[in-house]
Amino acid sequence: MAITVVEDRDPIFVYQGAWTPSGNRFESNGTTMTTAEWGASITIEFVGRNISVFGTVPVLASGQQPTKATFTLDDAAALPATTFTAQHHPNATQYYIPMFRSPALTEDKKHKLVVTHVSDRGGQLYFDYMTVQGTLERFAVPESGLSGDAKVAVVGGVLGGVILILLGLVGALLWKNRRAQRVQHFHDGKAMSPTPSTFMPYNQSPMNTGSQVGNISSDMHARSLQSPVTTVKTGYTSVQTPYRPPLPEMHES
Image 1 (cartoon, rainbow, N blue to C red):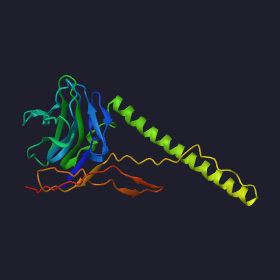
Image 2 (image 1 turned 180 degrees about the horizontal axis):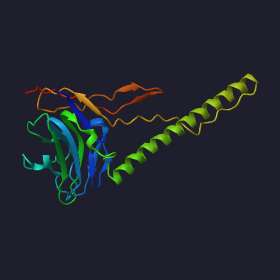
Image 3 (image 1 turned 180 degrees about the vertical axis):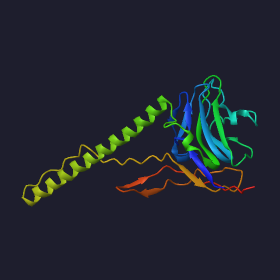
Image 4 (image 1 turned 60 degrees about the vertical axis):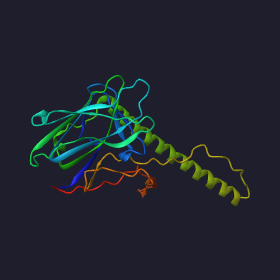
């Protein structure tokens, strides 16, 4: 049965409470969703054999409490809710930390997992991605799973990227026109002193918010943080995509 990696921005997740989009190049797809609100939650529904949750464990600020979250599977009908308490390193942020792994589940039954943030005194939860061995129930999710604040932040980021791309295109056109004018002046015997361009082109990398599918062959989820960022070709330019570490494989039992 295939393993699906479900990124934190996937619309299948239903976020409740105050969540903020964040992330850096060391995290899967370069993104996470973060909350400091006690009781903020994430819900996902799926049909399959198991589900795992991974996140980032930051360095604690002075007086800040450890990251803590509860995981409730199928409304705790067959399995009591479990609690994850992070072991924070004093000097280094930890990535791809497994926070929850379900036991073997009934494959042909729909399941629901609810992740709830319960950190004390300023603690924060950084959710990176989940892995699901089975089928995602996308039809059971509302049109938008993000809360109002998170939705505004995501839309603002996208609009900002679009504006930067438009400014880059305008700058490129101005630079092309000025160069053409200089060439024409030289041909006419009227050399024109070069002047610096006001606008410079800008290339905005597209954000990947989807899921990826891989095969898993061991229970350990180790990923290399030293792999370089890759470059791919799009329809209009060469862009750098966020680094997505390779997945190990898991044998079916």
